[in-house]
Amino acid sequence: MAEVPASASDPSSAVRFCETFRWMLLARTLEDKIAALYHAGKIVGGVYLGRGQEAFSAALAMSLQKGHDIFAPLIRDQAGRMAFGEDILDTARTYLGSVKGPMRGRDGNIHRGRPDKGMPAMISHLGAMISVVCGMLKARQFRGISDTVGASCIGDGGTSTGAFHEALNLAAVEKLPLVVAVANNQFAYSTPTDRQYACRDLVDRAAGYGAEGYEVDGTDLAACLAVFDKAVARARAGHGPQLVVGKLLRLCGHGAHDDGAYIPNAIKETPLGRDCLKLARQKMLDENWATPGELERMEADAAEAVQQAVATAQRDPVPDPALETWQPLSSRWLMETDHPTT
Image (cartoon, rainbow, N blue to C red; front, top):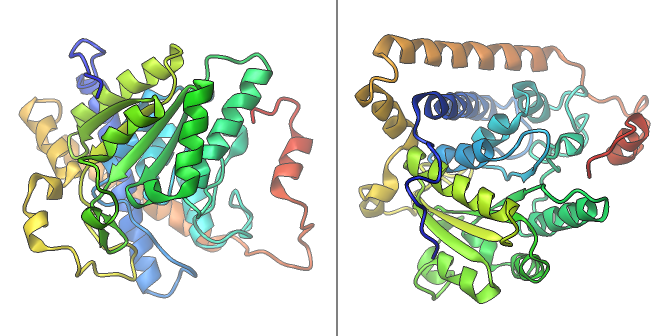
């Protein structure tokens, strides 16, 4: 397992830490609203929340170069999505089925993406996203672009899929500049980790593939920023794929339909069960990076942004089958741009 030197960067500086916290706060506020709309019957389909994973997700996105790198987030990566540049309206419009959303209301409520901005649309067969990123990286290499990093997210359960193994093996053989972020939230739906794998820790798998591995406290924002800075820099410098395992606990059920009753109280009381948002907020106060009043304004700003986005999406039209061209969205986008990035 690779060590992260304290001098790798200054990830806990006030400006960067507070910026990342803002994305975490906005994600939590938005997802609380999305969950409320789901329970009110306003959303068709499932809702899957990233409560407890915001620090791990946002830190990865903050370590990438927006507009240049590739980021393939999953359903619990709302914080990372917005930190990478996703408009909050994309989220609201997709969940509410707006025709103005990135998927035009045609592809469920979680499969959104902006390929032209380096964010491929999510595939529900979770391990498959790593292969997609590998393909995007090879495509860029074929076009002479060699300094792009591709990042893909996965959960502990997703690492048991064949697609995960095949993609990581390919990335290692090709020495692709890939960063795989594994959010080890202790349960694959309701299956605990001791029924998923027999190795000591998921990070031990990295050496078997010829990748570099790191594990980090996924509730500690400063630690997450440091480890992703290191992993992204190593990938960009030509050291091949990097596997980062964040230890944390999903602070809710698998989805908004699930109360998570199978999660033992004992594990909730361990450090894994700490709320990364509360920890980051307290650090900002302890370090005098923000006052209580400033934090209250951040919370009010997040609530206002969410309210405006949801209100806009609720006023949008829904798809009309009689008017839809049914042309694949990727083909439509390729026709509208002279410089595709995928």
